[in-house]
Length: 417
Image: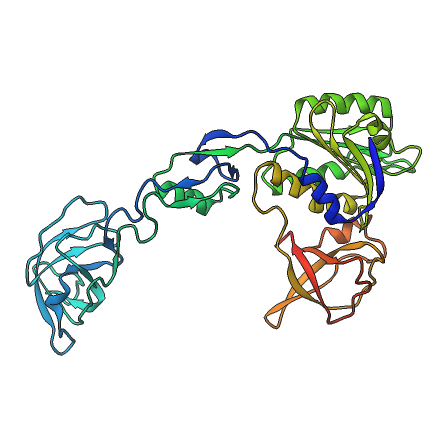
C-alpha cells in the first residue's frame, strides 16, 4: 500500500476518478432499466408526435371558413363525423364542414385548425357537443390548437446521451419514441464490511466499552438512496490477518468493497494494517474535516476498496465526497458531484483551519433564498450521530476561508431534500 502526505479533497477525488474503471456495457430492456446509466447515445426512431394531432377537445375545421366569426356573428358548420384518440379515420372536410375531435386524435388531412368546444354551441343548450350543426363563436388562425408532426422530436435526432441516468421521465420519453432496448452500465456489486471489536448488533446487551453498530445500516441506506443494494454486509473484529483474507475473498466476488474503521495510524487500526500488502491501495490524509484518514485503491483480487473512518459522520461525509462520485463514475454518469447552491448562514460558526469543512446543516427557506444553520456542534462533528440525523445537507467551507459569520453566504449541497 502506498502512502502520502495530506492532499486536498479535490485532489483525492480526482485520483480516484482517474483510476476507477467503468463497469462493462450490456443491453437491457428499457422497461427494466430505471435508474441505470446509458452507455450509448439514443436517436429517436420516430417523429414525436407521429402525426398532426389535436391539442384540444373541439372541432377540426378549415380556418378560412371561420374568418370574422364572433359571439354576435357565429358561423355555422355542418358536423360530418368524429375522430377519437387512436382512430385511423381521416374524414374529408369540405367548405362549411367540421368534425368533432378529441385531444390527441389525428388531425384530418383536410383540416388546418381546431376550435375548442368551449368556443362553440350545439343544438341542445344542455349538451356542449353538436350532433349535426355547430355554431362557432370565435375565429381561429391557421394551425391553432394543432400539435405538428415531429415538433417535439424528429426521427433520427438525439433524445438521450451516454452518461444520462434513466429517470422515469427519460424512460417515458424513450418509450414514446418507440425505443425498447438500450445499452447501459449495470449497478456495481458493493460489499460493506465494518470493523471494531467494540461493536455489537443493535439490541444486544452492552458492556463497558461496547457500542451499537450503526455504520452498516448507514452505508446500506446511503447505497439504497443511490439505487444500489448492498450485495453483502459483514462485521469484522480487530484481527488484521483474518481481515486481509476476508477482503481477498470479497475482492474476487464484488466490484467495490466499503469498510469503516481502522484506517488511522494507530497500532490497532486493522484495516490500514491489512491493506499494507496491497500495492495499488494508498493511505492518505485528506485535508477535510471530518474524514481525514482514507485508504482507497484496487485490491489485488480485483475490487476497488474504499476504507473510510469509523466515526459515523466521518463515514457519511467520506461517502458523499468520494464514494458516491466514484460509484456514479463507474456507471458512466456524466455528472458525478452534487450541484452546490448558495445559502445564508443563519448563525456564526467556527471553521476548520487548513481543511475543507463539511458541516452537517439544516436548511430553511428565507426571503426567496435559503438559510442554513449547523445541525451539530462545529467543534465535534465526527461522532455527532443524533444531530447528523436531522441534517438536510452539508455546508462546504473552503480551507482558506476560516470562520463563518452570520449573514455570510456559503455553498451547500442538499442530500435529504
